[in-house]
Length: 429
Ligand code: AMP
Image (cartoon, rainbow, N blue to C red; front, side):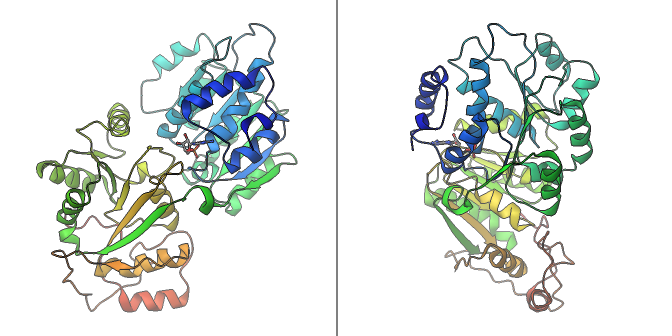
């Protein structure tokens, strides 16, 4: 099905086609094919879609149509509001809107409002109004409290990664923001998962929504080869260096459990001649943005990005060949999000997890919940020698898989198999 048959207006379609061509989008993804007609008709939407499915364009493209239908030179007031959980996602979604709106006239103003940077430039920028606002909830409320913008004319509200918004504790902010919006509006809710809290939120927010679900398998993880390599914790940095050199990956995203580990591993790689940078929440927003941008731009001094789960969600890095779980993620959800950073937009990718004697049971729980079985590999020269300590512990007690409670059988099995170290512990580097 081509983009031209989704219901875009004849004024908008040729302008969008140019932008789509520039982006290299030949045909809509399944979520776009299903969501765009609903949004163009003004209906509410409840969409279950992972990042990687093309969900950003699924709401960004139809939201632009209202601006071609507006009366000439309308005052700049916020008509579309997109709430996102993180600054990184805000920047990315804002960028998508700007690119698609490039050929539209009159020009559409997209404001990206997120914390971590000074509020003043954002306040100055908003003096001339904005048509579309992409924001994290806390900063948006700060700006509203400062009378920098009004939400009284919002016609469409998008909650992007709604499950993550709730996970990060934005419930109170959401409640306050919703009270500022017109009751008559279109609401679009995108979420990767549907825990009861999201169902409740959807129940209160949406009117007679169309429910759309795209299979995660078919789009978000199109071609990701998953590998698990057994290695002792103390050997992981050496193994990582070995793999980076041997396998010829031009870039890699490496996930660790702590800010400290991110710094230490990046430094050790850099000392070993592999250009690497750390990315974690303790860096200034300016630094985070710069490091991520340079990594995305394939700049030579950031071939490897060593990151905490901050970089696991939403971030879109084109042509990233490999993701490495240096430390295993704590939750199955985090595993899915981490590995989804590679194999984006139809490319293939590799996801490697380092597994030690102490984290075997934890990885087995992830495999079980993900319904997959990843064969264990060993790399010559890095074969593990550590065995389990006798006082093996319960994974739940040591920070095991979050979210779903382990069954009694899981606990017994894990108790028999798991060592002291928690999967997320910043063990030796
Ligand atoms: P998202 O799920 O919005 O984070 O998008 C994931 C990736 O898919 C991004 O790199 C988009 O640029 C890309 N993408 C989105 N829609 C299409 C499309 N119709 N054709 C090709 N790539 C797309």
